[in-house]
Picture (spheres, protein in one colour):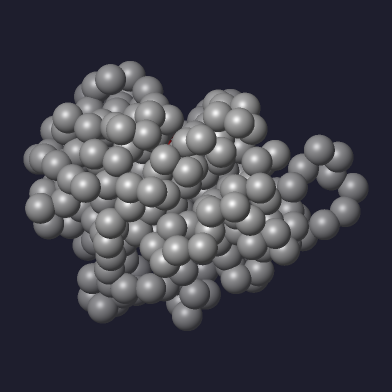
Length: 250
Ligand code: PGA
């Protein structure tokens, strides 16, 4: 894929169908040369894909998939299903999935493999808890989260992976990592990727920041040389704010 500027919107469990269509339409009409990925809820994916996915640089992703390929898993959605409706991306490892649904690194790895097998791209999320940062353990935590999952992925598929560093203490809290904290961690992540794979793979990897990124602070956060864009929660539900964020690269 190569290094690009990317802004992704994680809508979580929000919007009705009509709200989702209005939001997608408003976002699509305001894109520039930044890649935009929206993650609507499952029931609206196919309608949004059919209605809006006609321009370059505008992508649609699912917020989750099951770790198995198919079968008796009532209520679950497979990567194969998502690829069959024209999805581009699957988000894996969001802290809410780790926390509320107890997803382990092993399960996350299986989900990523499912997505990659079906030619979907992946945004892989990770980040430290508040206590870990307070104890100065944040680098260790992130390194472990990366090591336990990425090392097992096929090297030739790594170009289908985007990383999203999301400190858990910043998600939905209004408290953002400072631009310096974000840049410092992104540079560290790139060094971990270089050690695991190679400098070339590390330099080509897109690394997004997520956690209370909004229309006011996006420009400063995205100015970090290792920050390739953002994964936006709350502010991705407002057309104006999300548009401002898409235009926040200098
Ligand atoms: P937030 O969420 O922007 O509302 O903090 C980010 C995320 O959960 O990806």
